[in-house]
Length: 398
Image 1 (cartoon, rainbow, N blue to C red):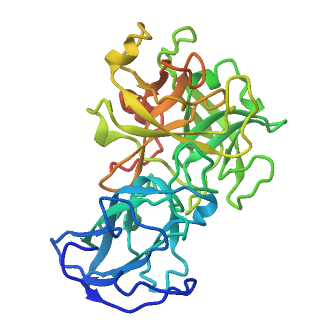
Image 2 (spheres, rainbow, N blue to C red):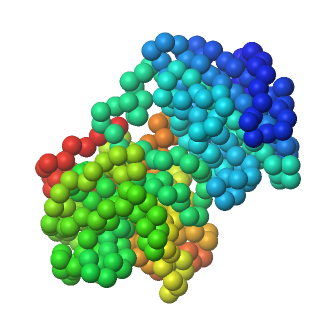
């Protein structure tokens, strides 16, 4: 439902037997107005067997921006049961729409003047709900239309603590042994020549024994066409890194050639705009191919988990030596684990949907142990150091 009266438009989903004519809407979006899109019965859950569609059309020179502050749908493989469908092109058939399920939030901007949204739920659905805001945004102001691009994500679904979609996070890289291809650590692309990771991943290592792999998902099958390896030319470990306390646990990997950017491989945003934010109470996403539990097997596929950032005081109760250059996370039953080191903590800017690297996975006593926070390197404390050591880089200041 929208906040203003909508024009009813009859429509039949090509994959549905029947269409609810009372849940099919079209809206001309006026500049400066906000329209709300949400499931029937919101703020309660929708019922099984719901089939709805909403189409928004923005004025000439504008694109439609959809910000979904709440998406809570039952999770299923490839979102095959309940799913929220969004077509950036405004295709009324939703034939090439992106599918979403699970829990989270997102921002989607149309490629033209029209955006289409669909909701399909199974006949035995336990129910779910979603709430989105639809506005008109002048063309050229969207992150997708800027020359400077960072933090974009392949938005195919929303899940927490599970396998990611293939190339869902274009900025994620793997540090591997150059001869055995065994996983060593994670990392994140910050520019065409530079990768950010943890110092302890590189301390004492011979550069010739390591390589960077971008565009990877399943390390066994190589199921992504974007996968490519790069030779490491140099590594820059923070000069004050301490292997005993893990303070200043940050490093830059310099590649011997530029990474080829595209929809499936690209840089994360550095958190310039969050330099004064301690992030306490926010949710971040951790990525990695690390072990599924302490001493367990390595994950063959890239996995993600949403973690809560806790205050410095809360974390210092467990780690007395904690300082302002570190950021802590704690969510019962979820954590980074062995070999996830060096990977990013990603914060999704709710205003733009862009991903910012606010932390580098550093240390923790045991994976997802009760009452034991994960301690990570706070990237905002090292922005000047990063800039000074990457003179050829051109960073987006989103």
